[in-house]
Image 1 (cartoon, chains in turn cyan, yellow):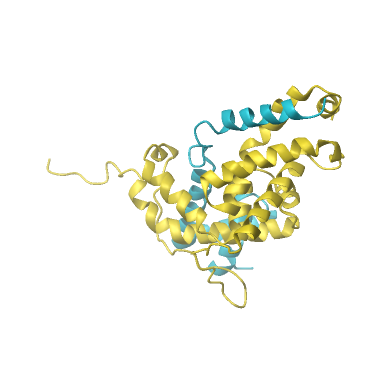
Image 2 (image 1 turned 90 degrees about the horizontal axis):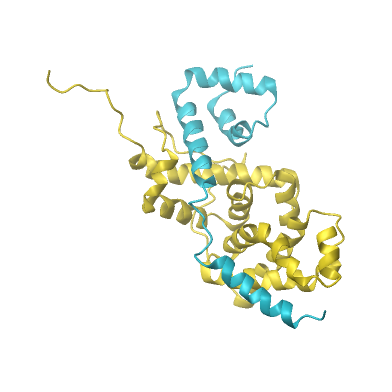
Length: 81
Length: 200
């Protein structure tokens, strides 16, 4: 079976998460060896996934935790023992 | 469960330790729904209080964090209903009618953008803005799976959808992000060294 570019794009997310079976992975790998477009699409997608996961992208607002626990303290004081 | 039993038995201060590991997930879930940092923070505080008040209802048949995140989701959805209108998402979900798949940004090469590039504020701003513009059903999956790094099952439980739906939505979200971000990120890749020699 030879797979085309569109077929590869359909499986890029699963490929990145190692959720494609061995046979499909081998087909995709073979396609990637000769297709610079799909290689670049895969590399860019994987790069974006890695960047998004960095804690610096979505940091909690400064003081978030202190304000949350201060409000909880008030609630805990009022709660029935 | 032992921790929860002790809180319910009167050691209320232990609730701080119980909720702490869930804080970021609560915030991201609410940011994904409300798309406003201040509102997400306010809703996160209300969520934590609701979790405390309803702790006696937690049965332990799901993970504690999953249960907490469903309370956060209900809080966010309730606020959206009160607002009466949802803000429009601006990234078009231009699907191919037949396959439901997206055409990616077509590139012939990719220079990797290293994580160190996140020291530049503009890169984080571009990533946050583009994720924020995803259609809601994709945005929430990305925030929980790729940013909070929850597994498929926990993401599915927190959002009340199937494992398969998480995978499909994540795939479409990543494809949309690639399409819109790839053309913008090139300037953050380091220059290649040694490709050219000038003079002798």
